[in-house]
Length: 90
Image 1: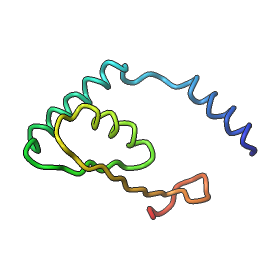
Image 2: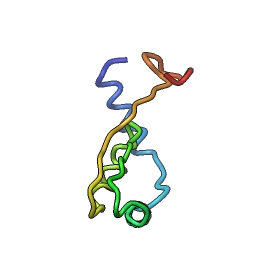
Image 3: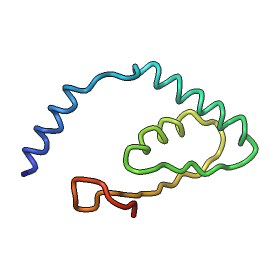
């Protein structure tokens, strides 16, 4: 499967996806997370740890809502490697 085939497939999957939560519901959930993090760490400098790849989008949205210092880092784990089906987490 070439890159153009992969892109066509990705667009087809996206176009057939069902909306689970609205953008407003997602924003509200991230606001609640920011309030929670701020409530427990307003005097500390927490490290926000994103799980790559998908978690980085939520983490950066969360970071933009925080009004106190924080550190940001990420971890990357994969079950796929060069395969298309999952195996052991590495």
